[in-house]
Image (cartoon, rainbow, N blue to C red; front, side, top):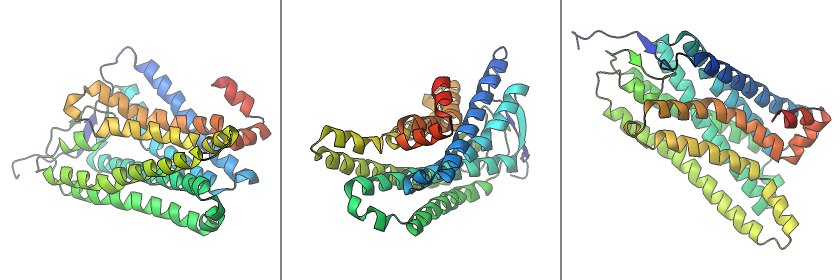
Amino acid sequence: MENQTMITEIILLGFHHLHSMRHLLFSIILVVYCLTISGNFLIIVLVSCFRHLHFPMYFFLTQMSMSDILLTTNIAPQMLSIINHEGGIISLKVCITQYYFFVALETSECFLLTVMSYDRYLAICNPLQYNSIMDHAFCINLIVISWVLGFFISLLIVVSITQLVFCGPNIIDHFFCDIDPLLKLSCSDTLIIHVEALFLSVPVIVTPFLIVIVSYIYIVLTVAKIPSISGKKKAFSTCSSHLTVVSIYYGTLISIYTVPTNERSLVTNKILSMFFIVVTPMLNPIIYSLRNNDIREALKKMNLYPLINRSI
């Protein structure tokens, strides 16, 4: 180790092979980023301003919007700079910090989606006790637990990463600091990190995903017992937006982190990551605004629904 040169800076190549198309890609990502920020911020404003949205489901939705804003802002500005300059340089400490916030926000979002599925389960399967269980204090506790667990669990693996020795090469063929390309820069044994990441994926991804699935199994069984078709449609309409968001989120997450990296091309990996980081947070407020009657009603009161519907 004494003969190794410790790296302090990392070169991010980004989309260095798209020389002629980088301006187009820059413009597209910039527009998507602006739409993501404005769309999620609009959801927060709507829920805050309109009394008919002061319910647990919409309170959880504002937390999702906040998470999407932070997740995208953690990476998108740097991604734009890398595309514009056909690469970029980032310090090792900043790289690890960026990865920490990425994992923490990603983990918190998994827990928030689980909390929202539990909320829909109570509302449909146990409506008589919904108000007594899902009171304001309980909602606050669920939100705090989701955020604290997300940042604490992520800290465990990041602390382990900081104990590694990074001796190069100092080049990452990506547009942000993800775990696999980051560990490839280390000359230490990274097996323990991979085992730790696999172990932590159980409470972070597997368990929340199973809770979501079980919740919707009970929801489907309950809705199937409703005699009227209109009653079934009304029940499903209250959770269709959340189910769509869950499908997109976990579908992309599983595609990125369960398929071995060496079985995908670098371009495919970058596209999937870009979709997860930039596109998915933009789709969430669109899905909720177009498929939720309460959100549409709030947009109409602000005279925004015709504009948003026409632009989409």
